[in-house]
Amino acid sequence: MPKVRRSKKPPPEGWELIEPTLDELDQKMREVETEPHEGKRKVEALWPIFRIHHQRSRYIYDLFYRRHAISRELYEYCLREGIADKNLIAKWKKQGYENLCCLRCIQTRDTNFQTNCICRVPKSKLEEGKIVECVLCGCRGCSVDLGFILMHL
Image (cartoon, rainbow, N blue to C red; front, side, top):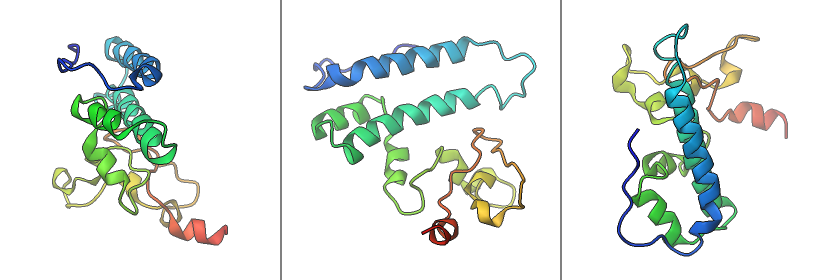
């Protein structure tokens, strides 16, 4: 994967605080990309890439929206430079999509019957003891199960 071209402007203040974590995630991404994929299905080889991409975007999202640890300027810089996925973060802000694993799981045009992925089905609606794994990204369930939450309040 080619190195992402950064803009000529220097990064905003606070970049040095998040840079080590982002460098570590970039290193993990490079290791996963060069990892041999013999013995795996074609789609299984991409699952670790989706997980790291999700992890990197969630890190930036949590720093800005939950912990308020970075400035808006740094947050927008990360989105503009492609460090975090702005479309995925936009979905996380909507009710019911707080735990969304990837955008492919909600795209209905890629499926035969115009439905969402199996990982978007709440666990309470699935068979008891059945382990579900998404074919697209390897997710085991990213839907918000309101029935389960209300039962345990």
